[in-house]
Image (cartoon, rainbow, N blue to C red; front, top):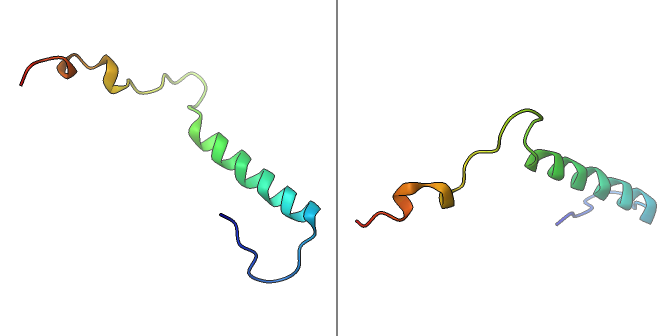
Length: 51
């Protein structure tokens, strides 16, 4: 959630700020080029082993 604390931004300014926040969040979730993503728990053989 984004909250404006000071000022009175225009709808265009709010849209620009939201676009920056969403782009940064999307870039943070993408792995770097050339680096394989970490394996998930689904590929872990210990997941199917009896305990």
